Image 1 (cartoon, rainbow, N blue to C red):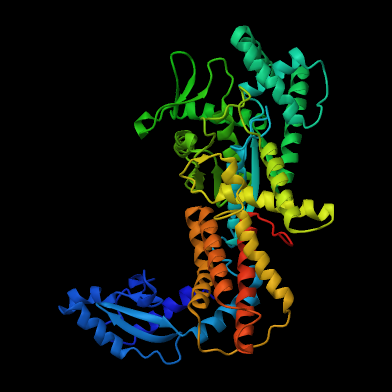
Image 2: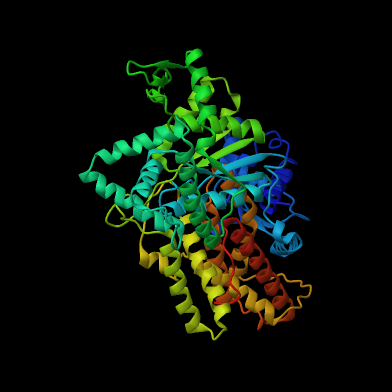
Length: 571
């Protein structure tokens, strides 16, 4: 039961009893008023009726209000202001229903069945296997993980996928660098970090020795076209070393994948699609012998699908992989969490597949996001100018450990576990709270702040709830008729959660969950300071406030599940 929806439906039911209102579109005229003095829900149906009845809307609103019978409803009062009919909740009923639903449903409160029986694949992270992930990779990785959680919360069967560009020119440069300077060594320490030194060295040396670029091109030809056994073995070994390093980082931030796709596995399938596009007139051979998708007549730039020497590009494999995804997994929805710089690329990929006759392309979605940048400008892994994700995690954990040591005397293992949860929570929240349309400028002070709209702030709200409930584990039934304003605000915020979950899924906006959980934490903090729980004026008030605290704790936990944030035991 969605109480927001139920209360709106009840207004519709009440108004449909009035003859000249019952055939109107009542639900679309119901809204949440901007000011609390105008009630909890407001109906502007009188404006719709004014034209039909040729009467003043204010008069119509007053006539309707007189005919509304709120006995046995969720409402305790109806008032008219101008042409608006304002409904005020019966908070005795609303509080009982809300708290009962949240406590009974617990982990399932707020879940929807929008995706029931449907399968969705979310492809995210996709780091190039040539260097460690930098802070910029945190955005696609954490956004994709939280989006997967959100879809699951809405009933979808979700497949989390990671796509490795294991045969691009940048990988060829790394393989070439290793053959020149690696001396057949095995990685020392974290593999991706160790390999990064070779990658940076190649780009520095290539500025003075341009012939290194040609060596890397030759290495790519041997791998892709000649299928050279020695090169293939070395290539895969280096890529797998790098991915082993990625997996260490994923483990630290609590991210896992159901499947890893490798570009090299889908290059041949992609080339078959390119041949099909050529035969069907979807693509043409250019003067310089490249094969190009003919997209200009469809309002997009033409799209190179195959190089003149027969080697493919990233898009060659992407065409093959997309076909494979839908054929093998029978998807209802496929989402790519990739930066906004690739908007045109995905438009071209989807249009090419559409022209090839694949109807499922309408279920392909590119969730774009802006980059994470440094205050001095864009990061460059090739030049060694980037803040690595492992470094960020390490620094955050150090800071969180200092804070934990200031507040609590605990065994070392427990302190470090709490610090880890606070650090990863801070990182996740800092990334996820920003709308995907906005850039994130990396700022250590903001990232490490434990005040305001941050992960630690919402974790602390949870700890407060937990602490209160541990001091009074028995909650009895209550009956109250008088409500403090802060109690009402907290109740209304709890009621909103299911609608926020549905809206976030519909818009693919995880930041809406962040906005909500921060507002909930603020509401609870104001309630906590204004309404004593354990020292309430009577037993009914005490048990009501304990129930409200328990409900808040449950909803905070459910938000944490979506965002991938763990709650520490203490802070």
